[in-house]
Image (tube, one colour):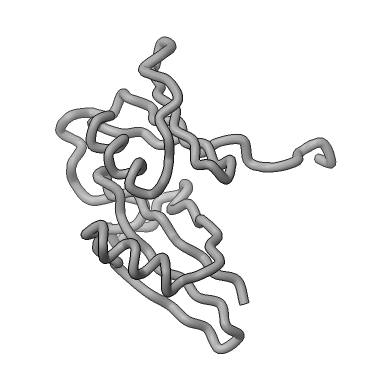
Length: 131
């Protein structure tokens, strides 16, 4: 469809709004509103325009592995969100300062670089630096 212009938001089901909000605030996201609506939902936005909707209906006992990433059987679904960055060294340093564990780093021969972290609900966040 030619009418699609960009991703409007990413929806993440979370167990604890306070924990998720604190985590994403460390990454520069700002709290906008919530909880609102029948689900309910809370919204955060980064100054660059990336918007995250937290769907606040995850089971309290859903603290097991991320079934899209951490179990041998490969389930269909979104596995991660990739945030493009312009300085991977600065990102790695910032994550260290924040005490956030990098779970994997990749550097390709063409100059592309990636690193991955997990949020409080084990959702995967990729920081992606193009070549």
